[in-house]
Amino acid sequence: MHAITIGPLVLAPDRFAALLAVGMFLLIATLLARRIDHRLEAWASVVAFGGIVAARIGHVLLHWTSFAEEPWRIFAVWQGGFSVPSGLAVVALATALYAGTVRFAAGAAAALLAAGVVGIVTLELTKASFGQAAPVNRMATLDGGFRSIRDFQDRPVVINLWATWCPPCRRELPMMGRMAAERQDVAFLFINQGESAATVRSCLSTARVDLRHVLLDAAMAVSRHYAAPGLPVTLYLRQDGTLASLHTGEISREALAAGIDGITGATQ
Figure 1: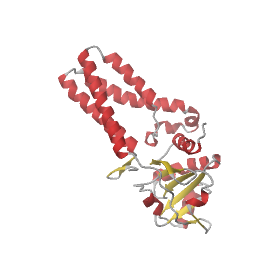
Figure 2: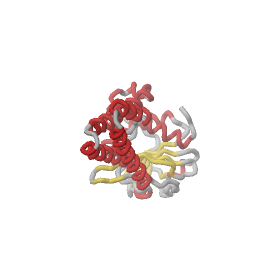
Figure 3: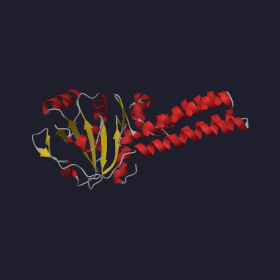
Figure 4: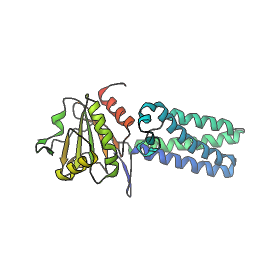
């Protein structure tokens, strides 16, 4: 399973698992606060929201060079990017400050354990299966030719599935175009889903985005092949064409770089 669809909302499995875990944590802590120690409810709020903020700050600091170029991205939490150690540090600190009795410690441990179990089980049940080969269909290019994904398998491949009507797609295209120009160790393919060459040219011209390899998947066959529930989707293919990993939704520069490093073995 590559994503969880809830009405118009599309969530990657890890984000869905994290949301369920946080929800379970707050619920259990609230219930236990009524029976064990009323301070558990305040502690849970500090742990949940403080931990999330700290995890985000930790991620930003770790990648500050990248964020310094576009400071507004600090608040673009929908792109992902959280430092688990930073979040856990707040959990430990808040627990140490609130703990004082065995009953409180037992309740806190129960809430944390329940959240951990829910998160791990949900992630295992919803995680994507990888390893499938790339599709063989040939797609039109903007210059009138036809290419397939397999034509680019002299190196690992990064595929971005996008459309001009998709706001997150348009937001991430300039950054992905710059990354494609910088990273020569992978081939970037921007596969438009279901639109005409004229529509795509107009969008790229208006946005002043220069993309080298744009393919037109008029039948949206690639989306069906990888069971993509929405757009945008970023796929990482090994050099043999098998799927190594994917990212559902708008992607950050840091996550994109990490995904590329994962299929090239590079460290930056």
